[in-house]
Length: 387
Length: 112
Image (cartoon, rainbow over all chains, first blue to last red; front, side, top):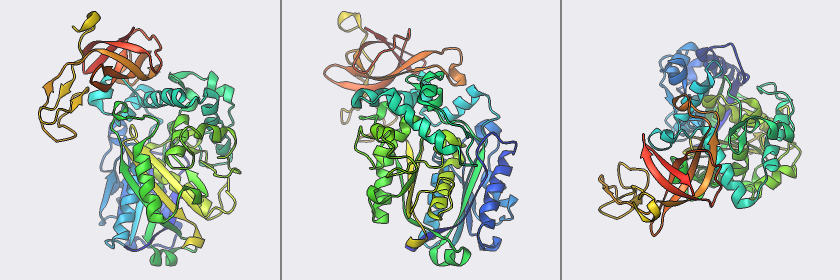
């Protein structure tokens, strides 16, 4: 097994964009390739995360389309799909291909186009990540899954709606200074609690917005990465695990086991624990998700995550900054692009040039989650001093 | 019908290892047997968690708002299922419910 590093990164802004699906993918990948000194003939493979292009855009075979669009025809190119964790999986497959020695340089990317779809069609397409045969038949939506989770979390731990709303307030605040974010304005706790009900007890501002976007990284064996960039980011650990397929399958709905398992293997491989992490981008598709994720990743005891938010412990200047990019709640959630979008933000932190820079950040963690907690990837990254 | 006019809940059981299921399975998760047999259980249940869907997907466009709950059903033996609660009674964790029917692949319970 050999060490792997991120040599190049590229992204589009996330938001309501005019660009088409293929263009978003091509733009992100070409930006990643041009951000480092890699030549096209050095790239051995491309993995592309995407979730709903088939359902919403009628476009499949995306990976070869994007590869051909950036002059990489001839190499193996393939799509990875794991609902909202699709590109976290793309990153992991690219990483494994290098780590095991099969390839030297691999592009991992993600892309999604969503904002042109009508809400009901879009909700149906995203709902395809749930088990249609069981929960799909009841009409349970994705916000509905997190509505159930929040209902149980508040019941078990006495958390308040105000505490949960503080997640959206924090992440929207962080998004104000991130030019890649869809939402660049502040909101208050009252704005969240007065917003339209979506899936009780969830309200509109508890939900991340849809977005269009693409993100990509160039991964390389660490000895090669050192020749491609002056600031390689080391992949210290990578975990990927499967969880429960539906809400009724959980004994404890407040703990998503895909996350705990992926985190355990990523921490173990990196030889670190949660206390060693300096900055986190985690999967805040809904405000209660950030609370649960922060506990499942081992940063807080069960039931303590909501209090930590309110006390500012996860703010950019807090002891453990979570989602300084604004997260999915402010950046938006172009589902297939989100996982690599998170890794892009963490790399920028570790290179010390993020708009919401966390002082002295050396170890960062990115957490991507798909379906009803069905699949998760956790990636631990180390800054230049760790290479 | 079981006691108090509550219909029995149509659980199924693995004939080889006796694992009980609420939602139908295609293979037993414990022993991978491919067949199950009907094993009705008491239709009284308790809400584990509840949401009310106000913005539905296109398959359920004309039904909103509607209540979905995770329900623990049964007495001596229990299973956990996801179900509809008609009439939007806004149930809460711990509330009692009773099985009504299974229709179009979904379980329906009423608040009691």
